[in-house]
Image (cartoon, rainbow, N blue to C red):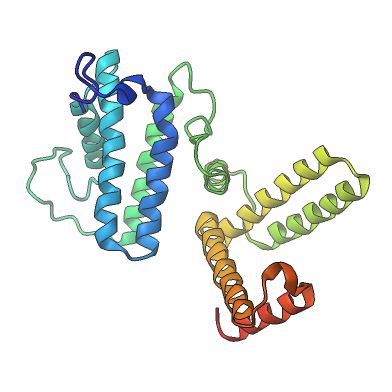
Length: 261
């Protein structure tokens, strides 16, 4: 990385990059890691993890050049965090300590993890720039994931329903508001109400202990399987999707469903 960023002998493209310009590549590489895992393509996963690691190295080099931090700070930071969040593994808070004898259940591990993260957020809240419990929820997250994290953070502060039933009622309310916005012909209102509806849907997923991002990803994959089935059946009959008509497409869609696609 240092060679790539060498001002005299480095790569012209790499020399032009900054923290901001690398962010889209980082997000893309993270999604490619997720895709390789979903496809169980483990030989490919090794390469994708390398690409993702390269992004971390890139940021570390940029940080060193700007005098913000160095690679060692990155590794030290995550090491200290993991030691702190696993007192049942590192009972004296030191990395090199012999393994402890504390035995706890997975649910207790989760509870401790959340409690320690809450302590860390409380410490951050004492800093002048930290004004809200929501401040450290990354804006660059996919919208569904960010909605779920925002709701979870608010829930930890007591701002939440205790069960799923009122969330379902809220979804019905938001859907009515979408209908009203559509009837009004106000495009801005439609967009706003659609956002509210989707936010409420994420809230229901959270209450049902469903990861919204994963659920939609699976829904996308299901749609893709069924649509590809339609395309293939039409191609076998010498037809195209554009020529088939909605009734024929619906028939093939139902056929795909009956075949478990």
